[in-house]
Image (tube, rainbow, N blue to C red; front, side):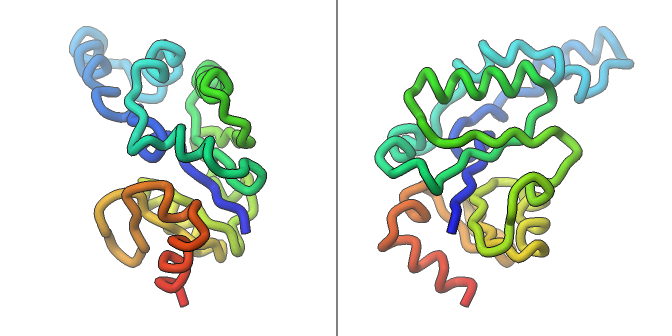
Length: 167
């Protein structure tokens, strides 16, 4: 069983404040679209300033990276490169799978029988439909098991509790 870990909102808090500058720029340029804004963002700076959530980087380092894959949606090649470089600079050896915006994560990797830890309900719904094990990162919500720390799915003893939820 592979464990896919989302980047934005699970490993790094890249979302807080992300659109503050967009709304300021939108006042000056009404035609500015969110996708255009995200494609032009200085992702190297944005990723480096993002807060690491619940010691996620150190937790990932403490486990064998073979079956723990970082799975992240991106809006541009610049964003993909910034994320890959950030994780390598932080000595993570996990595979990193880039998912272009507009494509489901389950279209890029096999969901069936594998875990996805994500903070996006849309991603988790799709994962579940495709036979995967969806785990919500954050406060309990809907039909998904939720966790607050990656240890809860990476530590084999704690993972049993998560898996029992789906049996």
